[in-house]
View 1 (cartoon, helix red, strand yellow):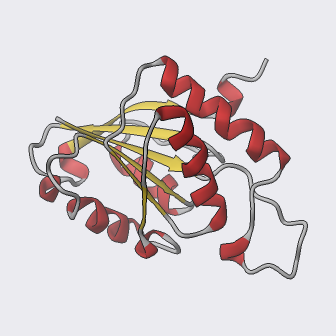
View 2 (cartoon, rainbow, N blue to C red):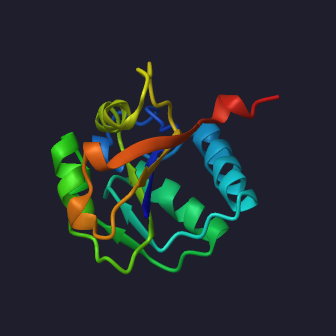
Amino acid sequence: MKTVYFVRHAKSSWSNESLSDIERPLNKRGLKDAPMMARKLREKRVKPDLFLSSPAKRALTTAEIFAASLDVDAIRVEAQLYEAFPEDVLRVIQGVEDAVQILFVFGHNPTFFVLANRFSQSELDNVPTCGIVRVDANIDSWRDFRENTGRMAEFLYPKLFDS
């Protein structure tokens, strides 16, 4: 059994129009949501083996916040995860070493929305910022990870926990 957590980056800032898309940081809400969502996974005792992140500042910062909460020492930046198509993300995952059991991938919509729906039994409307889609796959090797080998097992997002 292999598990992938697709984590859409937390809410980003559009306040500085001189920044390129890849340089946009998290905004105030993103800096609040990311630690809260990471804490929810820590409370579930999730123990990741590997973090992969898009090089975009908003995705990498989200990954860093999760890494601090979940005691992950390193984040592997994968350029292919930025402006990726779903097939690009699947190829990156299929290249992960088989010793990894629990993988986190930090990236972007619309790609994560499309992937979530490919692994879901029902149609999702959206994967909101800092949304987390857990996919469990009955495989021994990441080479075999694809739509017909995995199913969405959990879908979490910040508004589930807003009080």
